[in-house]
Structure formats: C-alpha cells, structure tokens
Image (cartoon, rainbow, N blue to C red; front, side, top):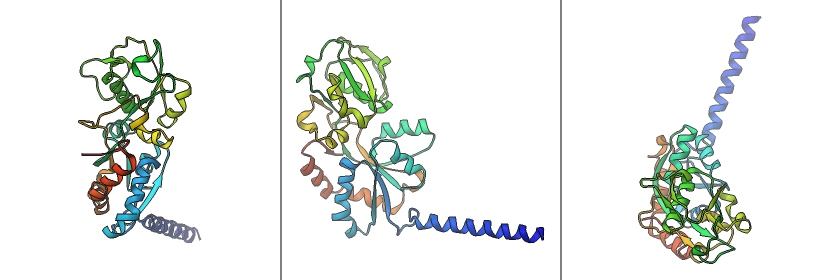
Length: 273
C-alpha cells in the first residue's frame, strides 16, 4: 500500500511538472513565432511602440505585445522574471547601476531616442535667478542623480570635481556658490514637486506625461551631442540575438519611426544617432 501511494504521488508530481512546462510555453516568450512582449513607460516609449505596432509590425512579420509600467523598477523586474522578453525605457548608465545593485545581467541592444533631462521651475524664469539656499528636487536613482548634477554644472549653478563619475553625488560637487540644497525624489513624482521647490530636474518622459513641453518649458535642457543617456531596447544576454528583438530594433531605428518622433514631439524627444 505504501509503495502504491508513493508511486501515485510521484505521478502527480510528474504531471504537475509537465503542466508547469506547458504553461511556460504558453506564454510564448521563448518561441520565435510568439509575440514579443516589451515592457515600457507609457510616454513616450509606449506611444512610439504603439505607432510601430499599428503601422509597421505586421508588414515586418512581428507580433508585438506592449506591457506598460509607470516606474523605473518594474520593467526590469518583469524582464528578470520572464514576464517580458525586452524592455524599452532606460539608458545605459541606469541599466548598469540597476544591474549592479540587483545582481543580474542585462544587455543594451541599441539606442532609440533621447529624452532630454530638463530643469523646471514655477518660481523663477531664469536659472541665474535661483535663490541663495534654493531647494532643488532631483531624481533619486544614482544614474539620474549624477545626470542632474552634470546638467546643473553645464549651466553654471555648480561645478563638479574633475573625473566625476556618471553616478556623481553631492560629494563630487567642487563648488556650490548658491548653497543649493538637493532633495532626491522618485522620478515619477518630480513634476509634483514644482509647487514646493525652487527648481526641479525632471526626466523627459515624466515631463511629457504631465503636459510639460521640454523644448519650451525647461529653463535648461540637455544637448543631444555626445549624450550617453539615449533610451533603448534592453533584454537578457541570452535573448540579444532573438530574431524578434532584432526586428524590433530595425523598425525603431528606421526612417518611419524617426519621422514619427520628430513630428510628434517637436524637439522634446530626439531620435538617437
């Protein structure tokens, strides 16, 4: 009797294992003919992918499924857990810092566009008018914090020490003549700080999502030339040669998408070189 029970339990376990394998296959993430699931932030990444899905994907033989997240963490978590095959929301410095802190590897396949980081204010109309001891809200992730400091340095509000890294912190500030006080905030919440601080350094996608126009509303805006912060397609190392990923990259870097970005965003989002 004990032997029969043991055999029955083993059979149940085997059946469960086969069922689990079947459900994994049903996701289609690992099938070359299945849909390519891509995690995005809604603006502008989701909008750009929707254009590709509606206008280009079918002709290219690409089945595209878009999964939207509102923050900068969940798209990478979804990639790690196999819920998506790729994501499109981040630049290389952010990917490298995230990979280092979370202990898993990702591959940046290709750049698509740049969302210029901008300095915004409801209290001053010129950076030179920033008050002594002014409050400045900046993104709280290391890569974009350092990026914010570089933007402020490029516009004369602070200076950074020679060879300051892309993940520069306040310790890398060489001079701060106005005694600016920095408050790290989750990137998605930065537009909400405009009523509370003197300056807010806001990521382009969140500026656009809250109806700010980076090209018109920013007091200072990043330049595209030599900029390492282009957003692009990211996947796991073992998926970098997936034909679906390569096909998507070709579409995103093609002339149709470049024109769509230029026409829709009017300089607030720039096609990557």
